[in-house]
Image (cartoon, rainbow, N blue to C red; front, side, top):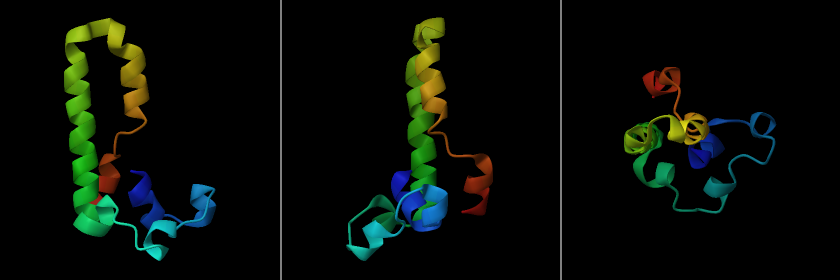
Length: 80
């Protein structure tokens, strides 16, 4: 998600310099696959992570909370 944010948000929004990856021709996921596919891939990976935590029940709740911070908001996926 950091790579997507680097190309979709302003420096002010990020609290750091935006566009560094693009400026340095870094081979990031969005640079190779595009923003739309990057968002879909990130959402898929987070969903897979949640599925892996299910067998652990309540013991996994702290990890699920942490994992939620990486979930791609549906409004963002719908815009992609």
